[in-house]
Image (cartoon, rainbow, N blue to C red; front, side, top):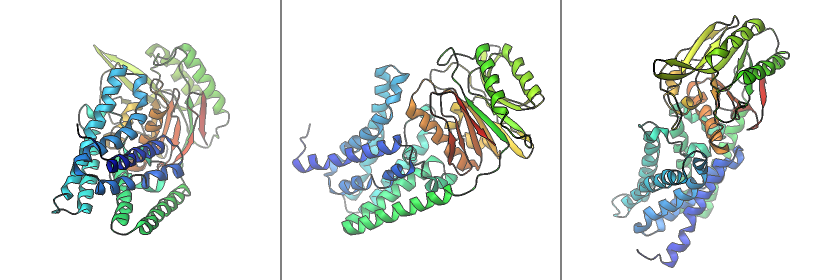
Length: 430
């Protein structure tokens, strides 16, 4: 194994620091902290111009390890330790190969800016592929969009390509700062950095100031099943959901229809008559999660009852999470509630890019969620996915979870309301 010289040792701290800064941005729920993502990679791109080409892959390993290993800690919540380590470390060793493309500039036939653009294109293309290809589409591994999604101005670029366009903007911003340093000086680089931060901040404030689309009355409940994680709802749970819904309904105005959204909690068939009776007596629409057994298949689905207690809409869960018990079934139905075209999908389905097509022209998407087994950061990722889908489809998204995320995200991808994780409560949109 080659020994690193003193210069390389010093430079090696840069990819580690850059990776840790991206990890900090990924963990943050504040847009002004996530501004870090637009400058954190610039020093890394400068260093890649200076380092010996034989260390390109090594520097890639350092960067991706510093970023991805801390942000995949939640793998250990539901995987054996060896499998969690293999999944996260294995991905780091794979994606680090992108840094080999910096070698294009070594021969002098390609300039460094062109090589840097090639790295960015390959990076973004890799993200695009891995969230769509079989097997890799199930990997909930962070991309740069998760480190920047609270920046609502930049999030609008998701309309053109979802996660990958936001990632591309982050990479290009950092590349601009790096090139200003390499071909200019530190002052020019500082000016470019400041300009990018100001533009991103101004666009955030502009989007945050915009009005959200009107909604029917919506009540979204967050309630853990009494039996614990991944245990189907019981009569006790249904009674409590009905009680809490009825309490919230006292505050709902009567000039619009009211939709009550319940979590992904696998309500048994034998308990659904209670729900229908409640919807009918309270004259409300109810969104709930249940299972349907057909022969040897078990399909998970979300049902919407109308205000007479009759089924208005159902959609099946197409994507079954690793380790989850159930069978895939595709549907893309929607229905009208007064002036609003609504649809509903379960939990994990909203992580996948094909959810954009399934949402179609719907004005509102109701999403029951159960993320109880995974951890806080994964819930943040789930909320981020909802924000991407909102911008891509121009739809309002309201989720209801067992313990988070329970959120109201408007058509601009702005998280307007949410509940603290692991607490019972409700979001009331009147």
